[in-house]
Amino acid sequence: MIATLQLLKEPRHFSEKFKNLAGALVLLLALLVSFAPSPTFAATTTTTTLTRCTETDLRMAISKAQLGDTIKFGCSGSITITGSYINIDKSLTLDGVGQQVIFSGGSTAQLFFVSGYYTATFNNLIMRNGNSKDGVGGAITAQANSTVNINNVNFSGNTGYEGGAIYNQGAIVNINNATFSGNSAAFEGGAIYSAGTGILNINNSTFSGNTANISSGALFNEAGNVTITNSTFTTNASRQDSGAINNQNGTVKIDYSTFAANSGTMGGGIFNAKQMTITNSTFTGNSATSNSGGAVQNSYYATLDVANSTFANNSASMSGGAIYNVGTLTVTNSTLANNSSQQAGGGISNGFVYLPNYVYVKGSAKLVNTILANNGSGGNCGGSFTDGGYNLESANSCGLSKTSHSLVNSDPKFATSTPISNGGSVQTLALQPASPAIAAGNPLVCQGILVSGKDARGLPRPASYCDIGAYDSFGVPAPVTVKSPTTTILTLSTSSAVRGTQVQMRVTVTKSLNTPVTGKVVFKEGNSILAEVTPDSNGLAAAVYDTTNKTRLTIHNLQAQFVGDNTYAPSTSTVVSLFVS
Image (cartoon, rainbow, N blue to C red; front, side, top):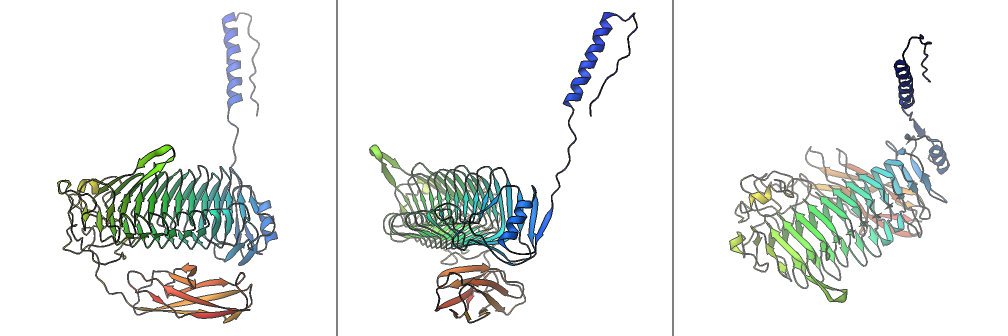
């Protein structure tokens, strides 16, 4: 709309001053009109329901979708991607809610590529057997400046040179309630590779059985920011480096997470080369197979802060059964017990390294409010440490001092020999009532930034006194309960199947109480984890066994295990055999 101003012919007696004023008014109004905002209209988005689960229908639906649209699925089944990947070149949501939608690469094709400056959201889906061949991101590659949201998605059997399942090329990737199992990388990042300064947020997710030929079976981070909360990393492995996570030049924060039975040549759970903070987490049974740092290795010039965390039963073939450090390490209100190494420091080893040109770098390690007990072979500590005060050691190898209110040659009197669930999301080592660690910590430290007035379970520590270690008995006393027994029964929809078909696996967890089970059921073939499922209120759980890549004319032995919870004891089914023809 163009606004006009009409001027009446002025009387002859107008002065020149008023002529100039009128002209200024015309100019002012013209400028106001030219800068007035144009009317805006809200974008219209639509939801399309795909009724046929085929690659052709999916590609067509995506090509016709408008910016911000949602594609839902009115069908279940496997959509096999052939040829090139599906390019998401607009902001789009794919949602498989209420269906079982499987995107498969048939072990020959990559699944999705998300172009820069767009937001792609994947909800309630399964992505398996994507293969980027000599490229990256077997299931998803997120181009720089894109945003990828992943909610309740299962990634399995995907492969790539870097990032077997996901390659973050400098994007923002948000992952919630996802499962990564059996993904692999020829180089680094068996499940995820985060390149450049990409941002990666992981919450309530599980990484199990992912592998890499070089480094980091689960996650490799180049130089970006990574946040991990309420997540579990189990049985991930690499051949030449860290078993689960490698942080090269970025910042990683880990909170309320569990690392169990991961393995690598060094840093069985984690290798850190830059900046990392670990809080409220538990590391058990991780191993460095030919080097140091059974759970964590902190490299030279790197910084690692550990608080409210438990390290138990980790091992290293060289030094540092739990932690090996040649950088800057601070351990606060943590518990390290029953770890072992063949050389120095069954619990923690603070070492040194010679760099090129004869540069000598020695690690700096500080202990505060921390328990080190019963760490074998290499002793509790190896190397020199700064006593930050209020520590407890079962022997006298850490250089602790009574003047710093630390206790040596003191038995912490754990309630159990291995970490168990004492409430909260991670397992801990509770203290017996007579433990000398009770009320022996520095309350100022317990109320500090990293500890934040809580123990590893998230329960409050008293403001005026607190326990040494990750567990605080003044939060809620450790429950002394006898768990109710269970029985796990596994059945298959058939005892023989033609290769390429799917077999239904069903589990019933029988129990004697009316309380629903909350622990997970793990479906396994030998030592390989096939799926992890939470049973319903009746104790029923189901998963699919895909025979596509299984050996023909062979008997495959399947088994299910209920891992137990706060009420019920774990149980394992008998082995059930399936013949694949």
